[in-house]
Length: 64
Image 1 (cartoon, rainbow, N blue to C red):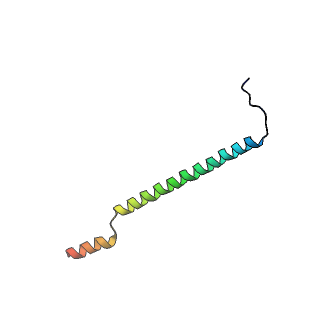
Image 2: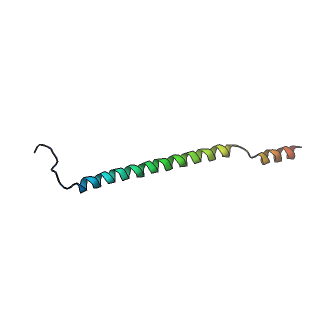
Image 3: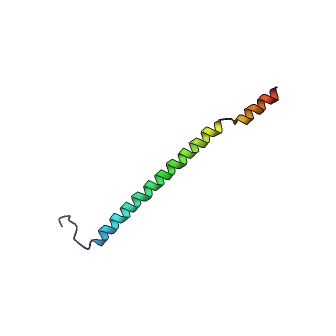
């Protein structure tokens, strides 16, 4: 055996290629979805740290 692959029908090779390409698309979509969720969480966290203007006005009115 020389280590060469025996030539057979092309269908299994094409099928493996399609599986590989499909897995690449699925992984890319999952990574993009994860980044979108992380970005959304960061925006919500930044907005959560800010006080709404109504609450600052309410505190000011209560002090007056």
